[in-house]
Image 1: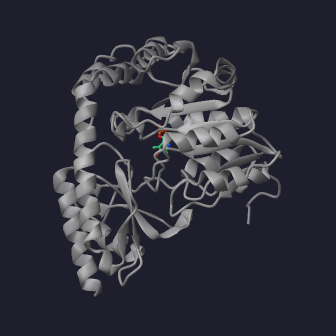
Image 2: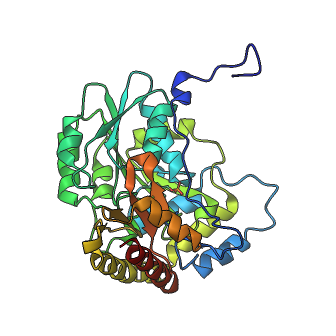
Amino acid sequence: MTEHAKSPRPKDWIMGIAPYVPGRSTAGEGRKVIKLSSNENPLGTSPHAQAAFDGGRGSLSRYPDPGATALREAIADKYALDPARVIYGTGSDEILHLAAGAFAGVGDEVLFVRYGFAVYEIAARRVGATPVIAPDKDYATDVDTLLAAVTPNTRVVFVANPNNPTGTYTPAAEIVRLHAALPEDVLLVLDQAYAEYLEPDEDDGGFALAQGASNVLVTRTFSKIYGLAAERIGWGYGSADIIEALHRIRAPFNVTTAGQRAAIAALADEDFVHASRRHNAEWRDWFAREIAAMGNKGLRAIPSKANFVLVTFSGALSAEAAYEGLMAEGYITRWLPGQGLSQGLRITIGTAEETRGLMAMLRGLVEAAG
Ligand SMILES: *Cc1c(COP(=O)(O)O)cnc(C)c1O
């Protein structure tokens, strides 16, 4: 019951949003917490980025560069893109919301795959559009089911590649096939939040598509491999017309001064990115092998190209019991019943010590469950 007889009434579509649930960052009382719930970089931040961030002191009374000029140029340089077609946001989350906001509204449909990134549904509902969910193919993105779900009302299609929370990857040929079969007036958003974790010779072709097509927006973030999650910096690349529309609705000073400086330095520190990718690949492989060894107990690691692994549980130990058991020991993972994944735990690859420690705890829980 409301306490007032009359009060402002939120739009029905706003009240239809299930609030985003962030990864937990606290465990039981007095526990040393090992946070493996938000896909952050266990190696931290590039020391050069940290130094650039610290050097941003002294400018607190001034608004940041509203055009993020130096950052856009650094991005364009690195990826051989046109700086005028780079949009930046308060995290790539903002860019995803801008895409839905500029291209969809009441009566329109926003399409994504089952077990897609949780923000897509919120972004669709926030603007009054209808989320449409295409079936997955063993947790992975299925281009055929996505295409089958396209209707005359479809305005935006979101594809995360690699996908979160599944870690699955859709190869370039499939992305090209999806784009080729989509109507040209449907915006394809390729969310590449984890692209830097792919091997250098792996590329889903997103930038090449965005260079030439009128209906492709690629998004990237500094929150994941670059280790700048606290500063909230993301960016996107698309046609001049798409970018122009997004600029109209973004917040005027949406990326902080220290964040812009840190991001530029982070982009330049290829050694840090390389070391982060190597660490992740090594421990993700180790993690998958350890889970495979518990296959007879119903555990399965969904093949991942990101910095986390979705583990499914079909034996005596449930995902929920594993989540609670790990939490009791200070290991925070992500159980996702709200996303239809009550059988799965998404676990970020941590440091060597964290990853080994988590696996030892998990093995203990599996054995105790019988
Ligand atoms: C983490 C993540 C993002 C956004 O992160 P920001 O911190 O807002 O840049 C976007 N898409 C996916 C799939 C993610 O996992």
